[in-house]
Length: 261
Image (cartoon, rainbow, N blue to C red; front, side):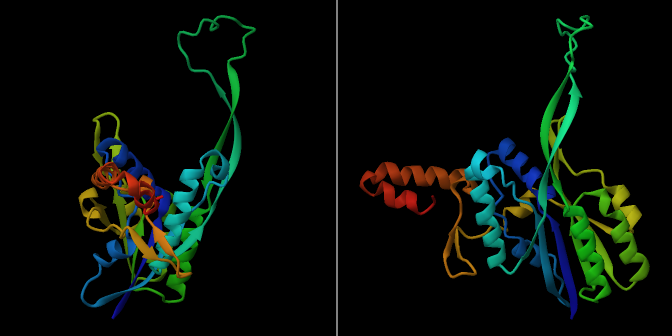
């Protein structure tokens, strides 16, 4: 049996899913990656390792606690499925940018400072971690085929190394659709350069496929405790059903809410 590994860039998938939720009012973030990955396995293949690369915004613990908790819960849910979660980190950076307001009243005022400082946070280590694990696993002969779920062209050198020095191993690059502001529609990112440079096959994953691969609303974690889907990950239909239950049985309102909160 041939062994197949999966290397998933968490945020490269999260942002399209977040945009899809905003546009279609349907949440697919409670995604069952083990089920999704299994759908790509052929008869003579078996799953080796599934890696999920992500980073937690620690500042969200105070600034956005609900989002912070949802992320933590989802990581536990993935680990319960046997997925190996590799965490990176966010780096705080200070940048000086210039005001771009074309009709600014102070535009001609030479004494007016048009620059100002902003603080941003950038996710770090994910692309490097994916590259390291991919090359390490190739060197240790941990896979015959590797799926890389990412549209990050920074991964080109790592995939090229695998293709050059391990010609018996196959690599496939997979991507989700992203929102195109010009045409107001979801399109697949132009990662043909990534495919060509790495000599890999290209896999386009449609949102319609993801709908068939969602985690159950509650699963048992590695610690034996029940993991429940966060309310923010519930589908619109489920939320409507929940609200209907609450309106019909007000005496049990707290009990119903406890199932999801």
